[in-house]
Amino acid sequence: MQKYIFFYLLWMLCPLFINAQILNIERFRLDKDTFNVWMGNVGFGFSTKKQKVSVFEYHANANVAYLSRKHSYMSINYIKFIKVEKTDVVSEGYTHARLNFFRRKILSYEPFVQFQYDLGRGLEYRQLAGFSFRITLHSHDKINIGFNSGGMWELENWQGKVIRFATEQDSTKAHTSFIKSTSNVNLRIHLSKMITFFSIMYYQAQWDRFFEPRFINDTQLQLALGKHFAFTTQFTSTLDALPVLENNTFIYSLNSSLTYKF
Image 1 (tube, helix red, strand yellow):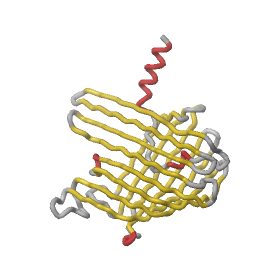
Image 2 (image 1 turned 90 degrees about the horizontal axis):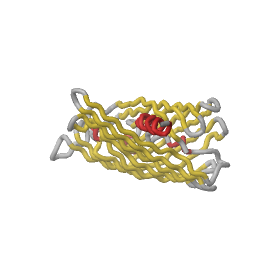
Image 3 (image 1 turned 120 degrees about the vertical axis):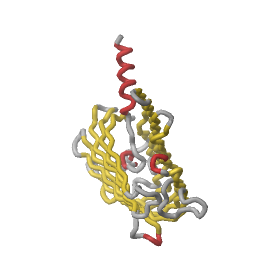
Image 4 (image 1 turned 180 degrees about the vertical axis):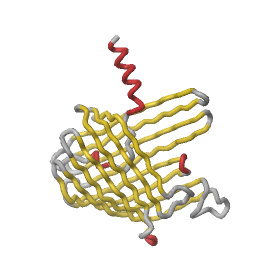
């Protein structure tokens, strides 16, 4: 009987498992003296509801990092799908891979690639590849501060009410390709043995329109619940001075989740 109760509770908790965003990779960085370790989290969940209409939701994530003596390797992946009757309300996902060469030095190097889509706000796909320099401004057991700066190539396809970069044939579609600068300041603070604060702020802009940027913020507060579980509250936002579609200037999300870590 206890076994069935355990699996029932596990099934009930699955939709709460981590809903991590790609931007805050700082949670996968450890102290410089830590090496030859794997860490990350994995989760999946689904729910269905039938009242006047049928609602179905599914999401899954798999995030992992390996830290060798000299370098670190990170992969973050997420997918979410919500359907109301026969209409797709939300369909989004991404995969992101990043390497940090010579991570134990004050100056290190990070190549990265990413594929992303968010059909709910008209982004059919975003592909990017880039390279940045990382400077460790402060590294301590309780506080870690870093700064990244570099460039990236970004390719996007949009569909919706286009207000910028519309194609000549169709004003509801836009295709963009830019070389952009990308910089961020990242912070991790252990407020106590149980509470950790993460935050990262990105500044991304075209080279010829540097003062019309896209700001991206990911802030998280994590409460440890034993060795493997944590409760996380996360706020993410994007402020874009040059949105491609209408009503995409400012977007945000607030999530709370139960996380299983390994």
